[in-house]
Image 1 (cartoon, rainbow, N blue to C red):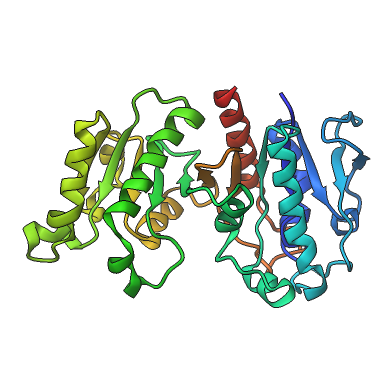
Image 2: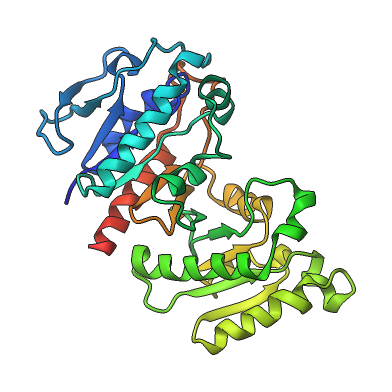
Length: 320
């Protein structure tokens, strides 16, 4: 199997210092970025092609020169375009089949907007654009809790006040279908079970606390069930994430960002992995940010990056 490509992410964050530690994952990987941004003393070997051999214990590095060195904790606008270009180059290699998948280190959306005019809400949307503007969903998956917690927010980076209008039947159906297909293709589940959360408290309480569940979500679930999808819901979000409830489904489709991300970050903060379903290539990412406050201090925890690499490898095996 080809290597998993680990992008550098924001060079002033913890991404570069996590790269050498990621070798502990046991996954055959290659890092793309500027070698100047790696921590002092890191054992690495530059390669010309993603699969070129390197000495044991060395980090394979696909060199991508940036405009400036990196100062931990202080993003430099001069390096913003380099971050964007690394992502685009990684996607090109994945689409060509030269890497088995991509694990992306965290970026700073603010730094990219200020330094490179980055026009996308986040990593996920930019990757979908590079893939041809394909419809995708963001799935957060636990790796250390049982039963696993996997959540998909149907609406993502929008204000909470805009969620009811944005949550259309078409959008919710798309999220459910992409999740269903992704669980089959990428995780090897033959008949995935999907739970669908309600939007309102108590899933609307029969229409007394909101009508979206009764008027839109329940009819949609019934129609998709008739097609053979294994769906449950709409369920009250406050009772669907404890262990006994999670045992009855493989993934939960939620209606908005925090409804999905709060439970998984509470249950498995260090082991959570961000997965983009619907792409023609595999993409995972650690479920944390750039951590400017601890960058360069040797305090960064590689657990989520290691989990993201291992899940990318598992997904590549499933697709193969």
